[in-house]
Image (cartoon, rainbow, N blue to C red):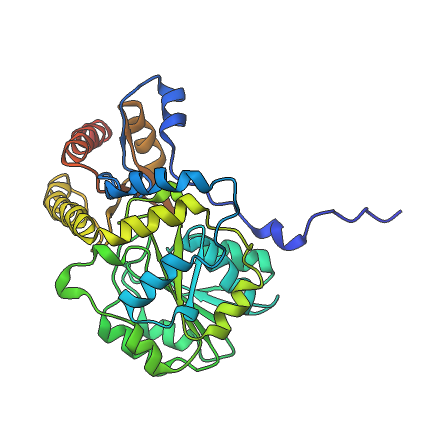
Length: 370
């Protein structure tokens, strides 16, 4: 008798589910503490604009109705401020969801998707779930993008190139010059997905607008952005994408659940976007703390990557053991394995939490060296 067929798709056997950073509730259950420094999930520790709470309260009177599937008010505001065609905007419950829709709209089983590891795990998860092939272009020893290798990798029938800048979990920024080099060599039939979830944290002298460059390139592309990070709305789940054409959005919308950005989330996003002063204040505080922590981490004998995001990444001997020991002391950080090496990713928190992290980390490093 032949073996019964599994009820589950075989492509999913190759998928390792994404594991998010530890929640405060889980940490509290494990260690019976009420106070933690939550530095594992790259959240904005200063929270969203104070206008968000009022906007959400005002929207509560509509919760019995389905949300506006087109995100009309949010779409109109972003379209005007970004100077983009409103029909080229797509919205979803976080930029990760839009990435999922975009890959499923463009990739068939057996197609090749190029990424540059280490990078955000969802790219590979979705690609493998489709039954497509992940081609990894390993980053340089300092985790900067190997531009020459990326260009070489996309010349032979690749379907999608995914670029993350600043890259998660390393924080490396793709410079304007290197981005221009990639676009100049990128075949027009390769779909480019540009993940810019951490774009607000880039130093002012290193910022550039990729949209004119993408338009000049002339291929099919989608720039992914989010309200989860700098805008402080991680639990509201609002992301948006700027697409090369309304046609791309139309194909994404064939996959996007119709009512997938709740009314309260739309109200929160619009209020957060409308308070750019708060955004700039919290980003400035985060960037200042990022710079302050860098020499202090180096004084501990660590070598952080060149991060332009709201976190630092550095190698330690045993990231899992170190993170568990730090958790027991109330500091939540993220272990990041990569091959035979292990790293800690530490989100930039408040000054108080950052100093707490440094104290606990120094103690753990001292114990391991003893």
